[in-house]
Image (cartoon, rainbow, N blue to C red; front, side):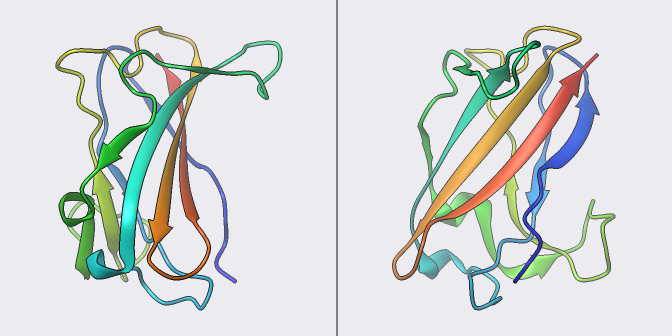
Length: 131
C-alpha cells in the first residue's frame, strides 16, 4: 500500500500554493482523469488547542474541481522535488474572492476527496503552517 501522510509546508498567510501529489489507487495504479467521477476540496483552520477541531475556511468548503483540470494522465516532474517519478495531481486554491490561508501563525488542512468511478474514495491532505 502507498504511504498515506499529510504533505506539510510552511507558506505565507494571504497567499496560495500549488499542491502537487501522486495519487494512486488501492491497487497502486496511478489515477487517470477518466478514473475520476468527482473531486472536491475543503480547507480547514485547525484549532490551536485541539487539532481535531476543524473549521472550514469561507469560500473553500466542498469546492468541486474538474478532474481534467487537476489530474494528469502522464506523470509530471516540473516543480516536483520528492523523487524522479513525478506527480499526477496539481491544484492551486483560488484566492480571488476568499483568502485560503488568511491568518499568520496558524495551521490549515486541505483535504482533497477523489471519488473514482470504481473503488473506494481517495484522499490527498496538505497541512500548511502560515507565517
